[in-house]
Image 1 (cartoon, one colour):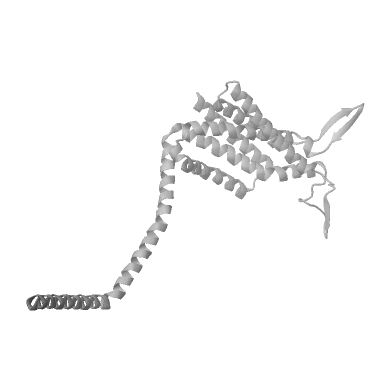
Image 2 (image 1 turned 180 degrees about the horizontal axis):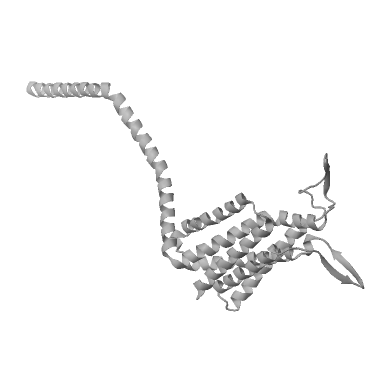
Length: 286
């Protein structure tokens, strides 16, 4: 019993001594290294946050670069980019121009407009008044023409006409529409019973008719272009490639707004752009 007790006591002393040594070692290392450890952990977390914030940007830039390379190296996608950028930039420029263009025509046809405000120097036109031009009805007519364009594309597709051929026809008609908008305007006279009635209003001009035809083209463009894009743009890069399409489109719109050209000249330039787009589309289909 005494031998066994002394054995257990020796074991207890060894355990006590080893635990004391480990305790001292822990205090020694943690006493001076605690701050260093916190600093290292802080640096690690900050660097990880920086890398995590940088990773999405690098992914976006890499995806856009790969998409741009794909567009440049694939002729069909490049043609689609050219056509889409030209047409959609012309559409957005038209959105900025149609209201002041019709207002300008109305003021030239009616030198003494009803929508005049009295200023200290005399009469000035109020651009925000729609007493002469019913902009609500005009915009509604645009939407009706847009719907008719979509219906026309649906009927053509059911008749067996391909989306690419429909797109070429839409681009050609858009060019003619912008030429009509750029044409010199004049009043229209119609015969009513032996009397000639003059319709001095921008709503009875060839410019307004061109706008209606262009809205028809917009309604047919989107389903046609959506069908073409769905067949030639790879699905894994679709979002990035569509973003690449928007770069030249936004650039053209900004250039038009900065230059602030006369309405007739702007519409003529848009007609030329639509002609270029129709030629590109025609070459792509042949």
